[in-house]
Length: 446
Image (tube, rainbow, N blue to C red; front, side, top):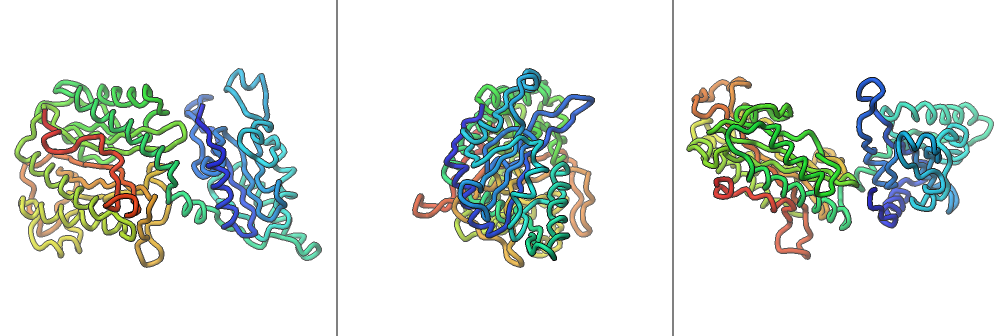
């Protein structure tokens, strides 16, 4: 069972309600999703719903109602207690648990939502609901709003707009509080241990699936739910496929192994780490050159993380180091500024250098505010993950050199999770949460 901190979620609801104005928010939970026939995928709660409630059951609905009196502002609709159903699908908190444990002002059985929703939304100036995401709840919300608009001429009472709650919620979720940072740090610790274990056990002749099993077994044995995303365990040329998840190949002597894997905790906070190392414990000359270059790019990019900086600056720093290094290695030709402007490096480095991290692996929050990159603030967590992928899959741009065979099949990515820190807390503007996973050139050889 998830460790539940009611005060954490209560404060989040308070902040959300303050910013809603007079809009009534309808925030549904996730539904169960069928895997095949009558079997369902393991349940994964909607992150927005979980952020506000901590409630980890499917098909619930939360109402946040700043226009209502105190004591009627947080309403939960949940599946009621049902002994027969719980024999098959497990424990339910029911309406009493929703109030006593999860702090709802009022709670009702889910099947009363359509009956009670009109009353709860009455008097709100707008309805905050994410359209297109919750097919079971959306018709109910639109029906209530439509009836309000139909009767507006007689009653003078209707929500005059349907607005998205996500800009407010995602702005709140982007900047992590101390509790969230502690949880992400724990996910990073477990994830880093798994990477260290994987490097210790890997040897030529193993299968990628064996390494995956060891990593994910460590996640589970350490108390995590399991992998935060489909683990990537990619030997040799498989590493040049960015989202390779088959994990069925044999690990050959002389190849590199790229592992992109992180765990998800019971309360959904995640780690996300990538390490690349030689299967036989020794880099070839070409592997060493490219690994050293990616590591230099990553370290330079991490050094730019600070309050007031931007994710764009992090990416630009890594990209500049990579392009200049590839010019020295004769894998690119020309002048760095022109190569960057034209994108002539993209057959070797085709992704951005990072993303936000939190309740979602690719977490919510704006990267740009209009024409300007969003500034980094203390509490934001981002990944920093430059890479190089040398293969025949993409056409070499006109004017760039053909790739010599000795480079082909080398795929390298190095990824860490980095928290933006206040300078009053430490001397630099960042904290590498995944430092437990080694990455130096010497550490990758054994």
